[in-house]
Image (cartoon, rainbow, N blue to C red):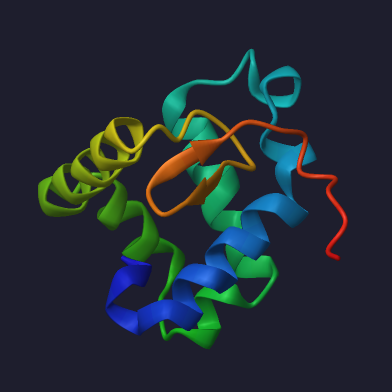
Length: 108
């Protein structure tokens, strides 16, 4: 859904997800159904004005979750990341080679 708005929309969605991760974390949602979690995300996004910024409604968001095109694109993107060696956040690469480390290096 957000992909049609370009890089800024994707970045805004990622920022929103990290900012609200405690709301969506496993412990917070472990007793909820998939539909309840989807409605929670839609309501939280709506309350944060993220959906409004990109001219979406909560209904648009919920409909996008069941859209097979978005599902396919997300799965392909996930598979490409796995093939590239991405296994978590953060993942570091240099010249398409994975760099193992904590990410706490200092620039010299």
